[in-house]
Image (cartoon, rainbow, N blue to C red; front, side, top):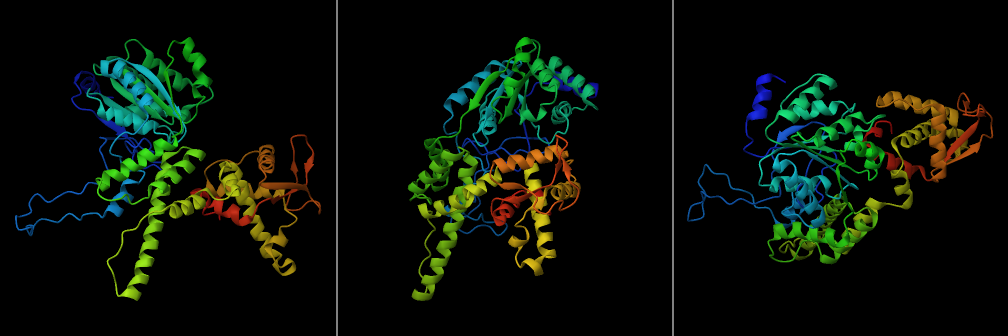
Length: 496
């Protein structure tokens, strides 16, 4: 970092709040009913702004109602379309709903640390979709104190030490290499006259064999002369248990805050608040109250993830819109065309979407498999197709061709080929591969049996005990269900 720019950062007062967040994530947070925060692989300096739809009136409209020719008219959204927009994950909700206890804890932390020019640390945990990042960003925006905040998504970082450079980059400072970046960060932490806030989202991604990076960051925040307040956010509830003892020994224990899953009343209140913000209290909501409650109860019973509730409502609205168009077209043919009715989301629409999303217990079981297990199933599906094609005249059906299973040794070879094609990760060892299959057998996804025809499908795999493995594997569930589950993972789509 050049001396002049570092001096400017340290001495110049910060007159306005700046917020750093990401812009291209697969999981956009719209969890608290407050702020939709996008997570991405790059850190950009930007301000948090409200993004829920607002219909603007034309200030240049003349008294007779005609607009000047050089002024474009703003298209007014229908209540139904506006409701669909407000229920999008990335749309900021009009107000914070619920989380009073959590809000109070975060406000107190900000007031006692960064707002007073001091350092400190906090660790926020909770399941996905419970409003951790969104609630924090909403409260930062509401703060009357002027301080700079930096949000870093730790997932894209391939090495823990890269977090130092990511923080510096967000603060328009530079340092090449982890050691130099850490040295530059330390200078800013101790020489800056204005305190600043660093938010590490998905901080559990920084866990390594020794956790030195996490220890160093929390130590910097806990130093008496520090000007850096640190907030770590992660889904893992036991993250602090893994490295808290050492933090206690170094006297830098963070404030702990856990976000519990949303309850039924919270989800209903957040969804209704969003809908009311576009209806302005005029007429009935586009979603029946009973339908909202059904959605909230189902989501609260499974995960408490508000993002899922938003997705369910949006898809139900799309289904209701299709039904309405179909009914309108039918009435036009019969009556010559009446005024079209606005779509209305009923319990039936919500129930259909929930059934589609949740799927069968088998689908849930397959979706819960880790990526390595899904690669094993990809290898099975690939070999099953080859086996069926080569033996189709003799067996007649694919099910008959694979009824005896596929040799585990052949599966391991195909699995390695798929890993090479994807070029994403190295294949596991043979013993680890056998463990993956054993876990899936325990979960009821596959069946492993002794081979009835000797060594089929290639070389035998030697187990950890040194014994040759002539076993075969077959699916314990329908292959169509397996394919549907695998296609939900974008990286596996080319393989299938």
